[in-house]
Length: 447
Length: 158
Image (tube, rainbow over all chains, first blue to last red; front, side, top):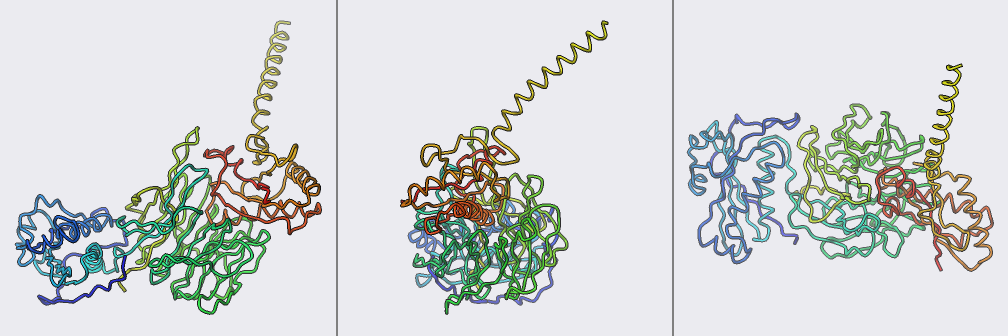
């Protein structure tokens, strides 16, 4: 996807300041998703024809509203109503909705909009209406290149989500993951990237060598990951735009489990030698390498706190895999996991308040969260095999992966991406073209 | 007298049961002993009488007596063939997190390497490569399959 900057004009049609009867509480399990009507975006015939020629889509107005509708639905917080029941046409609704009509079908909120083709660009206006109060809550317009039409849908979704929940959304994001194929004993793995809703899936490597555990940098333009190129497992950097790859540092042994520091200037990773693994950082600019942990145990899966001051990591120095925190210079190491079982893959929430992890206990795998001092441990989901949670940028959703048990013949293996809300609700599979594992969520593409 | 006969018969039946069940269990334990694979199904040979791999218990990198015996044979073969260099490939089973398993595979391979070195094989001849849980030799999802995957395999490099 090209780095095109989307121009956002905040166009105020009516005073934005309005109290609202609608509010969505995302901190509790939501058993009553908010009924919302997402009208197709209206579009004049000339514009519709132009976009059909350029994008090969019959009605880009409906396509964009479908993106919005799908996002709101999969969040589990909204219940987009069936369009067949809508009484008002998209173009009229966008100008002057008859709130009685929308009330009739029990919609509490309404999204309308208009799409037009001007100066070779895509222009989208959208409005969010509070049906109960009979007022407009929000009105925005966007102008961008036609190929970015899906991103417009995601940005609208984020604006609506934020307005109704008070929290930033997570729809204008991408997922980087490992696409998998082939028999379990000889899996072919490729780096893949896709929009958070599964669209625009693209492979970044060819599958000639094993690739594992990719992570975005803060600007989502680079990826760090583990590659077995030439049978030498090492941490690499990949530029998403150019496809250029380079090995990170010059280590005389396996480096793995790489992540970027919150300011993107360093890579933190593990280095294994002589049976022990320690955590190291390397500054990408001056290439200076710093050793952060120094213990004969296995120290791995490091994760920075969002302010960069702390690191949580996985260590077996107590005998089994547990979670520890330390200051980013390696001092003040504290164990924080004390429950029954083995803990791994700690990831610090972008909100700074929680650490998500994988737990193995009595043969079952769990995805859970705990506070950064280890208290308040909460297990969200249990399975035969699952691991490696990654946070959405608003710290409300976790994506992870699951593998299935094979039968007596050793068949039936699959790996799929799944997501679950922090509340423990809304567990759902994230569709990928083939199998997938090691997912990692980008930050919001719009900053 | 009748009671004696009944007791005697019961005793004989019990003995028979024990003998039979002992046969059954020794078949099971022939494959897995203290969580370490002891079978030969997946083992290949570097040379006649020199098995290419050693196995480990869950989460462990400790060498069993059988493992040390295998490695002594490998060391003897390597001393006789002094030009050969090897790669020790360390593996883990699927019942663990991916990154930790990469480290565990490396630790297992190094266990084998250290032992070979005590028998005079120079470290220049040995390199270590971990595959974590990425290259299982058995795709089953059961304790026996998993035990076959917890291994360090010696591979000729030249």
